[in-house]
Length: 283
Ligand SMILES: Nc1ncnc2c1ncn2[C@@H]1O[C@H](COP(=O)(O)OP(=O)(O)OP(=O)(O)O)[C@@H](O)[C@H]1O
Ligand SMILES: [Mg+2]
Image 1 (cartoon, helix red, strand yellow):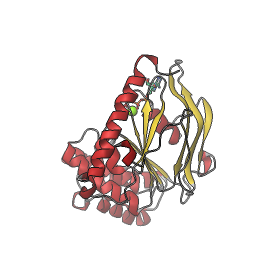
Image 2 (tube, rainbow, N blue to C red):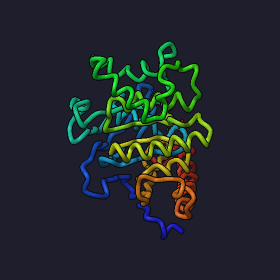
Image 3 (cartoon, helix red, strand yellow):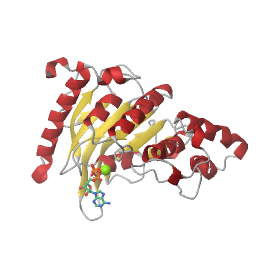
């Protein structure tokens, strides 16, 4: 079965470069993370993320997925090594064509504010005048299918709808790089599939570069152009799988034999990564 799949095998240095000639949105250059208490969150990671790529991080709990995502978001700094965004430092992130948005696992909405006010928040932070902001807010809410709910409060929405608001709040800034840490982890499978369908189309339409964290094998295969399987103790890249199926994708892909083959292969790799993660790992 493995021979049928266009998978890349892991080389011993876990060094991953871009498969084609698209420019990198992010480069992680031998970046590692040792926390203040001495815990080694990440061994040196080398990873280049191409513009337009949908990259997913998957692996056992504690393997450093959130730590790597936070490094990419510049929410934390590497203890050694460095990162580049669009071939430069973080100071240029936020400029036109180089915007970044982060979606957390919890929707983190302001409970006292209506949907439209929650979505408008990042534009208010940027001091954008209401006349310019309002159509952008309406467009972002429409994109996640919540136009009929823009005057609702978060408590009047289901979990899936709150997550949609959270995604609209990320989209309203017109990001180029979208970072999502287990955004649909708390949702039922049906709702998760629907949001995945929307996300895969949206990222395609908007030419987003997306880095996504999940524990779901099905979600990883459905969404991704490339999947990074990580192992723990210390957190590191274990293997890389390229999902060679055109985007945007639909239910037809989920129902295909190719999809099942990818899922089986990924499941085997995850089991191996978990074994490698137990009892201190490789180094
Ligand atoms: N601020 C911190 N201080 C000390 N250790 C930390 C800190 N943040 C994370 N760690 C440790 O670094 C390792 C990686 O954590 P991280 O949260 O990145 O894992 P994860 O892959 O996102 O796990 P999960 O799937 O459970 O979300 C873990 O061993 C964790 O305990
Ligand atoms: Mg995490």
